[in-house]
Length: 261
Image (cartoon, rainbow, N blue to C red):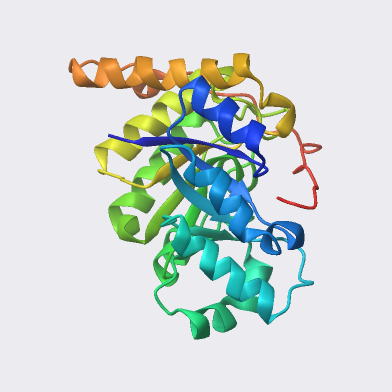
């Protein structure tokens, strides 16, 4: 079964809130401050029976000490992956692999053209598929069933390269990083594709911190649990085989620019 996760800044209240809301996996942000306090962060994380992935900093002001601490935290938590944006992969991948060549450095899909994305995934060692980015930036203006078709092609051809998944509840024309339950057809359909291809990594409800509250977190857990219950009973909770066309992605929709994403 899939491993549902949330994403937050690593601080005690965030771990507690996620766990009490029903999450048993999490991805959290790294920055200089976190990487200078990895022993404390690991202590907070290890207090909860959860699986973890890490998101590498998006600012390049890191020295070898930060990189060594990053690897230390990765191993302390037995992290499933280190998510990295393409510029950070280009800058730090070699130095990180000099410290430990076994790290799963999963490059995140950003604005990959539709005629290149299947081959692009196969050319990477490890990939984080960002479902929101694929629908809005790779397939702007396309209906949801076209997105599901492309996702199925990616997993059929190169599913072994996909180590991590970002999946907030995206809808064209709305802001990014919203809870999954706000876009049920999108998320339930992705759950089905991932399960059909026996994906075993984390599936992260990558929401903005404004949605890191008990109500929104619990609603995402309930969405997933309803899907999982239907799947176990042999039913499909999604309607992805007969979806109507979806309005095109708004040309004004842009990613939230934060220091930590």
